[in-house]
Image (cartoon, rainbow, N blue to C red; front, side, top):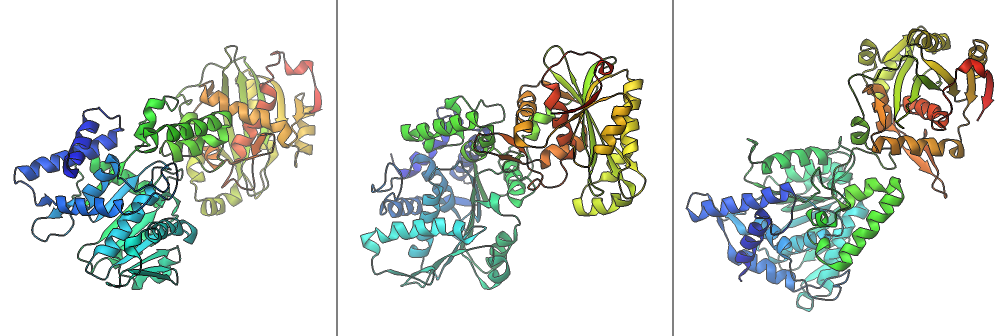
Length: 561
């Protein structure tokens, strides 16, 4: 079977389900088959150059694998790799003979030979062109950029046929005959890159890039090139405010046949687990791992990674993004995925009249939120949670500016109460708790509080007849409750009223872990406010003990826990 036939057969096998693939991978293959059919019918501005595909294949075969179980063996492109490079280099404009695709977005799980493929694409362009090419590897930092650069060096140094045809000096590879260069860049290129004229630019691990500055510099520098190519290659990430996620959404629309967006110059290949796929079902792993999941050592690696993620929930985010290539809206060491929390939200809370609850308070300084959480343990093992926050009126506008959050909107919607002055007036909190207890006939079993700056409040609430429980803010005290809330959320045993302030706080929360895998919220590393979720954890420390739902008035006093 010739190379083009292999590419066509691979695309057909994906579309027909003979090879399991995700929806976007199937769409990419169908796009190729549609384009090939139009070419056969002379109804296309493009043609497929089989000779170019053959040249790339032979170029790759000159080199040896540098890592893994195949280290030392000659590179034989897999059908997946052949499909990618066939699209990038095979499709040509009929009139100009230049490449059809000027951009590529490739999203793969880790360990699927992406550095190897990028190295081959870059060296092929540099060494076989008659023009003076400028090829740049652009990670967010120099260390990331150097990964592909070092892979190129390893490949060409081991190739006897290339000896004497290049030099490696001053952090760049130069092809002696043409003067073409390969150079790794870093984020400093956003300031110094305007003088560059890239013919090939590789944007590596784009999900790490905090801004699109490097990408923008590379694109603007390509204006004078007749046959440019920019390749974005990445795993999924967890920060959906970064430019990579925007690019992911855009390229997903290019693949979607029901979406009117078209871009004939942009090649897209996204390999990911589909939304409803079970991560424990090994049959699904090939969707994100078109190479790793095809051999036993690769499957063993994925099994090991999954086991670690299931044993230590803090590792699950990395498993989902790096190994299953799913975008996860959760920070590094983030407390929990918002998708799980959002799934527990309801429009109307159950009837809580006469129910027993535990109250958690997280007091603030003048610049923070102060939050109160009410937690109701139900007989079926679920917990209903209700949260409210307070903020000083004089600091509201300043906090909106620094935090970049519409606190004023949450005030209008009733999720936050503004108190007069520059410091939260704790009398408002006391009154809020008492009013809800009386109005809703809630039986407040205990009020659980962070002792920092709360002595006076605790004494006054104790004088009102409430049982006050001091929750020490240490990892041994808070770990079980912090883990329990997350586990209950995953089990859909938390019920909440979609409070946006509490949801926002959860999205900000980052945990720290000790050597015994105890965890607690890390206030120093968490971005923005986490007071609402901290107050809920304080309440849960006691609520999770599932004590008898007797009246608070049977047991008064201040307790240290």
